[in-house]
Length: 398
Image (cartoon, rainbow, N blue to C red):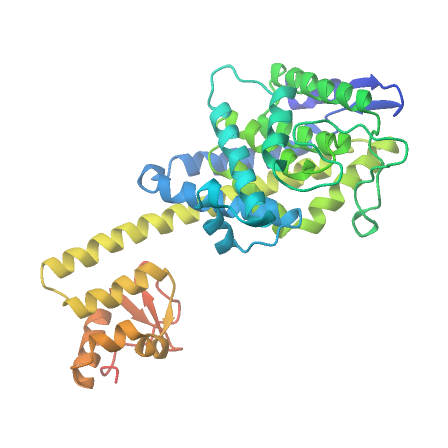
């Protein structure tokens, strides 16, 4: 089906207590086509890059970054480094709610990645319920039960959102309505897939309507983002589906506000009410894929640099002291102020029994060989990321 005909794919569901609920693409296919093409172009360039050389490293970075991103959106307090440490723990040694939140999201990611490459897998309610169970297990909450749909008693009303992001919304409260709408969302997604609607449109639409249904007491945002990522992965997108969580975190106000913007536009009967969220998602995919490609290029450059400096040592073109300096720059992957380098214990030990002339000669030679650069602010750079303001190579550094 051409995107121009996408508006025909509407599904209206009558509920017992919430009233009618309408699933609709809500976009103008002709206008979204260009954004969709930019994502496809970026993806083609990305998959053509030397991914295999750095796949393990990239995978680790994406998992940590995306767990940190999606957890922080929902109020998690772990830093990115603390998230990495938590994910490296034996589950039996996890301490505290914050570490458990990170471990839970990783478990949901593992399920997602397994199913996304399983032949014949399609979105279903059992998967959504299992995601919720994994994401909220062992986390305290007065009402939430892992893997159990919400069914509000009359004394408890669930609201979503806040005034700062477009107002509060009252999603379905009655358990039977929630179950019916979740089943309908899955069926509607199947219709979109059968009609040939690209995953980069289907996935955010499911995300958008899932959050409007808000089927669980807690964890809906985390579950919704994993559902979206799984649909994208199943369509062949690598790394970007989960890395997209960082884009949502970076643009968190727009992300939260757009849920209300689209919902209100639909309630007012405006044309293409979901256009803004789909455009936001597509731009996020484009930026995320381009960022991943930049990271792949950098990781490959680091591998080549590591090989080059090892060869230079083996061929005695540099000495062990110089190799240590370069290895420290490589490990950090960033420029280091020269004063900071010279104060570091590892550097001090290198020149404990050497004079200033030797120290100056070592650095000068590394700069001559362009294995390291010094910038005009006196920071030392590894050559795989040369600075724009390279200090001219004149007399030897003192």
